[in-house]
Structure formats: structure tokens, C-alpha cells
Image (cartoon, rainbow, N blue to C red):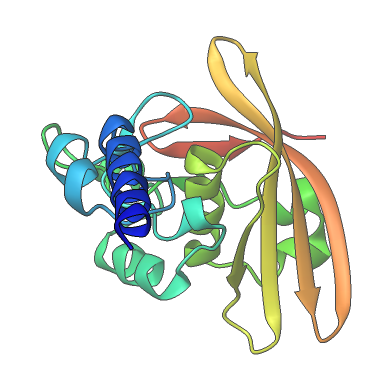
Length: 194
């Protein structure tokens, strides 16, 4: 009995010494985690592709664009250039794809049903999504959805640019097109023609 108690005590002592010797693993939260704890206190912003800080990601880092929240922001702003309407010192609300020639550049079938909320999802995805990570959202019409996937970055005339694919799905039919856009202003992305 004494030998058995001694063995159990030695085992417990060894286990405790191993646990105490292993330092606690402290790590930053993952990029997709909401701003709680460390991130909220020390770095409450999302770093954009061109180096700007964004207060909200609207789900983009997690692979979806929250169209309802985006629509609220877009609806509260006047005009189409959301990023540039924000004054100095204010947080940047959301990036947006500027210009109305989406159908002419990406394809008429993809561009015909897009509205300002869809352009904001595109702009914010170009700002915050990593290459190869798709960002999905539902369109205004039932059964309509989009997925934008940035594929590569490049520079043109000193402006940061990105190549991407855009997939449109409606009633079981899919259409996928490739495109490129450059950041032309504070939160504004513009498509490059053919």
C-alpha cells in the first residue's frame, strides 16, 4: 500500500511539474474573429489592401458580405462614392466599386442586376479579402448570389490593383467572369476595361 501511494504521489508530482513548466500559449485572435478582447483594445481596425484601416469588415474576412448591413450603410450615404464621402477624422464606412459600366467590363449578364449594395460588397471584398479567398453574398433578387475571389495583386500608374473572378448564380445557372480593378480614391475601386 505504501509503495502504491508513493507511486501515485510521484506521478501526480511529475504531472504537475510538466504542466507548470509548459508556458501558456498566448496568441492573437484569428483574422475572422470579431473584435473582442485583445483586438478590440489594441487594434480595432481591419487593414485594407492599400494600407487603410477599416472599422468594419461586414463579414468579408469570414468569406461573406453581409448585404443587409451594407445596404444600410449605402442607404445612409448620398451618392455612389462611399469611401470618399467620409471626412478626415471619421472612420471609413465601406469601400465601393465606382462607375456604372460594370456590365460593359465584366459582362452584361453579371452586371445587369447589380445595385449599389453589390458594388459595395465588391469594393469591400477587394479591400479586405486575401488572394484566393472568395467572398459570397445574396443579390437583391431571390435566388441571385455572387462570389468575388481576388486572384492577384499588381500596380498600375502607382495605384494598387487586383485581379479577381466574379461568379453570378441565378436559378441554377452560373456565369463566371474575370476582371481587374484599381483603387482610385479613398475606398473607391474602379474596373479596368478589357
